[in-house]
Amino acid sequence: MGGCPFRNVKESSSFAASWTQFAAGTISGPIGSERTLDTTTEVGVETVDSDGGTVTIQPFGETLDVKPGESALLAILRQGRFVKYGCKHGGCSTCRASVVEGEYRASSGTSFSLSDADRDAGIVLLCSTFPEGDLVVDVEATMDDLNEDAYRAGQTVLEVVGTVDRNEELSHDIRWLGLRLDPGTTFPFVAGQYVEVRVPGTEDTWRSYSMANPPSETGPVDLIIKMIPGGAFSGGLDKLTHGDRIPLRGPFGQFGVRLSHRPMVMIAGGSGMAPVLAMLHDLIAFGNRREVLFLFGARTERDLIMVAELEKLAATHPWLRFVPALSEDVPADAGWTGERGLVTDVLARLVPSTQGYEGYLCGPPPMIDAAIEVLQANGCKTRHIYFDRFVPSG
Ligand SMILES: Cc1cc2nc3c(=O)[nH]c(=O)nc-3n(C[C@H](O)[C@H](O)[C@H](O)COP(=O)(O)OP(=O)(O)OC[C@H]3O[C@@H](n4cnc5c(N)ncnc54)[C@H](O)[C@@H]3O)c2cc1C
Ligand code: FES
Image (tube, rainbow, N blue to C red; front, top):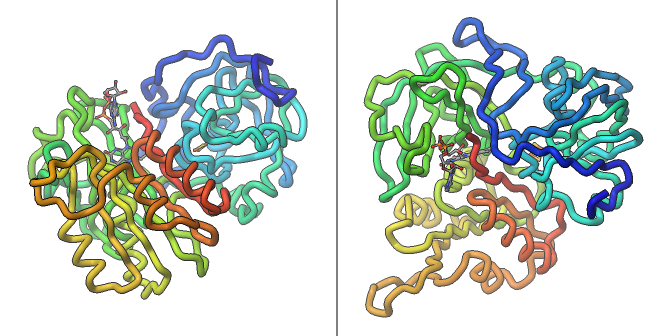
């Protein structure tokens, strides 16, 4: 059992350690059509050499087949059913289920997303669970607002085309990519969700990016993208020009503001700004009054983005406090009067008790993991912490 406390987990000795390229490419048909996602291998999903078998989903009592090397989540989506999920990499904790019986292999992606208590209680992440034989899982307690109609309706994925109408630097390595949908095309989504963008020049290589605009703006799909040197998509951003057309599909993900009365702490780093910006504009559109503290972490001043826009939003909306923080040493004569230190240290200073708060976190996985620890340690309930890890999706 190799250190895994849960009895039904087999040691997965044959993880393909690398992230796989998207291989199936089974979504076809006219652009702009609505289809059920049908794919066996997905972007960024770690492959595990498993036997496959079946997965039975309780409380709905349906048994679905699972191919060798296929996760329970992808088997469910492939067969036109829906359960809640986000990243598909074991990074967001959305696709939680409890194992009733059966054996499976678990991919290593869950290391930060499940606590020891979860594992002891038999909780798994369906995206990282690879059935071996007949596996029975229960989603009733872990996805409490998933009803049978939503489960059986499956997932509809829109395929649309975006035309580049803005491509500009926000910082030395972050760009704003503004896409416009064709007139008459609709692309409904929830603030916090992401879209998959097809890498130009490829048939079936996709990358995930969170929408930075709120859903109330119909027409644009605005993205905030960190440029990775040599990156298949972001490395070619410089070459995208006004009028270029890019296939998109989505929306995906469960990240987004939950309805409640609780004050919120939002923490983002780098291009993690995108979904937070969408959520803030969405809150404004709905006349929000809940207190929001938005901490934005950057290494140096040259890594800060959109500070003027956020300060303006905070000045005009009393419930919003925006605090940018620089983690690298800033020379005393540099003129920086804002917060210094890791965003997690700033959080602990500004909100010593996070009891009763909700946490919304987005950006690089190490920042998110550190922020979860601080939020929990200072009183925030684990179930009130929501996050989207920007794990490499290629
Ligand atoms: C749900 C979700 C939402 C996301 N939303 C956003 C978003 O809004 N904005 C955004 O910028 N990104 C976002 N990402 C990450 C994004 O999908 C891509 O992974 C990223 O842009 C790299 O793609 P690429 O094709 O440019 O590079 P690739 O060709 O995929 O990668 C090239 C190399 O760079 C490495 N690499 C990839 N990302 C990083 C990184 N951040 N730092 C260092 N090395 C890296 C890869 O491992 C690989 O070795 C999101 C990811 C997920 C899963
Ligand atoms: S979808 Fe399974 S952890 Fe994110």
